[in-house]
Length: 260
Image (cartoon, one colour):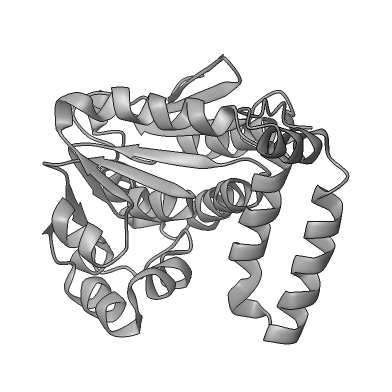
């Protein structure tokens, strides 16, 4: 691939934005490569956890402003194609039946924020800087930013960050619930891999149901959510991992989950 690196080891997929010379900015090629590879990961049952990160000095600087600048006279040609490819990637990340970890360093802006928010868990280096950035170049958000951000940090804070394009640090992101963990920059890779290994050795089908239930909760009333929980619970009792978990608990042994 031209703009991404992809590898799988020990049932963990690592997907890396790989345009460090352009601050990993999101362009047409990346949009379509990301759409295709996230679809592949989603369908691959041998992959049980995913890491999303960036090469070089930062996670992602957002959209490729050079592309927009060079295309000013022909706008909006090509824009909707890029946005729809990004949308498919966002949907793939949020619906794939396995946990996705964003491992973030340096800085993250614009579409990078949208992709980060689509991940299930977020671990960041302590010196990371964040900004939504969209309004700073006179454009409204994309990639589900207006969907995920208010659900994560609340409507007022989301409005503030989107209208003003504030730059904020990792501790602020942690305080408002935008991310899960802040770690020393030199330990980011190690801590991310440790978390990914734990998830890859967990009850994958159970994780899939937890993810689906959490992601659907804002669209459900309590009665419907309770029923959906019941169906998911019922299904989980038929899995090999449930048998292993119950047996291990009663026999005081650590269960061996196989993701089935």
